[in-house]
Image 1 (cartoon, rainbow, N blue to C red):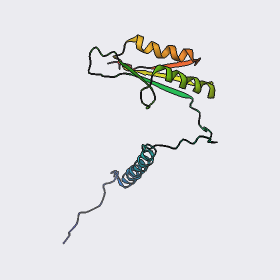
Image 2: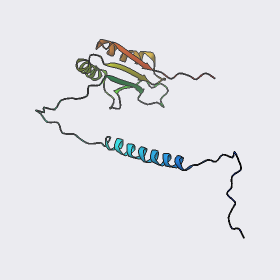
Image 3: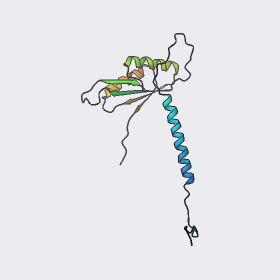
Image 4: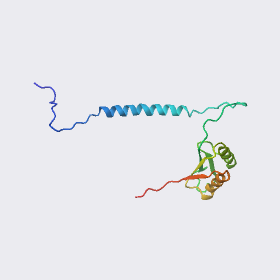
Length: 151
């Protein structure tokens, strides 16, 4: 009496072994969990000390600066208050952004500027930032735009 299936294969039959695939997926899951853990550790909000006579030096000079332009209140149809900020920083006045750009230009003469603007902004609001970049003698200016996909 037989209790199992007959495991004979037909001549020329192919079989799929999923064991290596499961191993790879398991390793990728562990990798991404660790990367997420390490990157979240670098984003903890804290107040850093500001010594008066520090001898620390900046080791990494940014080669690219991203300036974001967005509406202060996206739900206001006539909202003309525009917020400008460098990267993920808090919004700042354009004079402060200009000072930061001047510092970056001194530290890294080849710095590149990237302007990201909300599509609901008027061109005049974006042009103001472009003028600040030009005044600080930054030669390369890129503008981020969404390109519609062809159907």
